[in-house]
Length: 259
Image 1: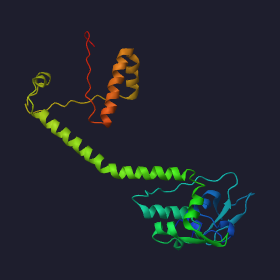
Image 2 (image 1 turned 90 degrees about the horizontal axis):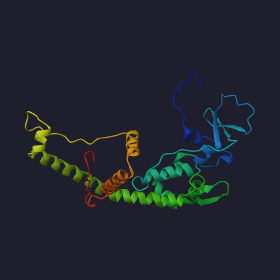
Image 3 (image 1 turned 135 degrees about the vertical axis):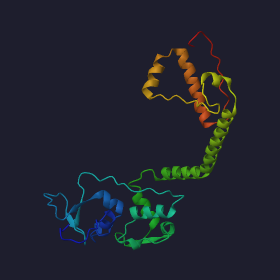
Image 4 (image 1 turned 180 degrees about the vertical axis):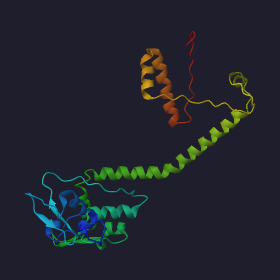
């Protein structure tokens, strides 16, 4: 940029894509443009370039084809079920060869499904959906499987979201009721273990947390029988986490002091 230039706007990839040369080789989608071409400043002295350098129409940049390998493109993701317009607009911007932003027609989903564009290379009209699908295959190898998995995930997330939230609220309320009941109980064991001046004081029972290294050393110190009990309890906890109606845990442990 010229030091005296008053324009402080920084052009992005889309600006450079729409400003690309009119040559037939640039009748490509934005994904191909980003992956197959490198953008260089016109002020940069590129020596011994293996591919031709072509200047953009108005911006102070030039493009040259990549030699060794194409770049990996990154792009935003939109949920097809909950954000359809942005989802289809993103598909069209990435994989449909266009020369200006106005070439995309709203609503984008309808344009994707039934729209047509003129292909300069084949000199005929092509369906937008077919062109997008053909270009998309180069960057998303398992489109069908990915789409099916995405649709299933979206359906499950929409149907289970309310149920999961209801379960969380119900469990929270149940825990609150349990805590209030404990506070109101007269437990002689608490009175012996925790001698407090205030009779209304509630003693918290806190869970013990251990880091992974501490747990690993404890497991290694267990004998075979102790490990069997540990993993039996762990398996029950995992089942209880996913199914509140699992059978209660029943264990009878006996032995000498320190068992």
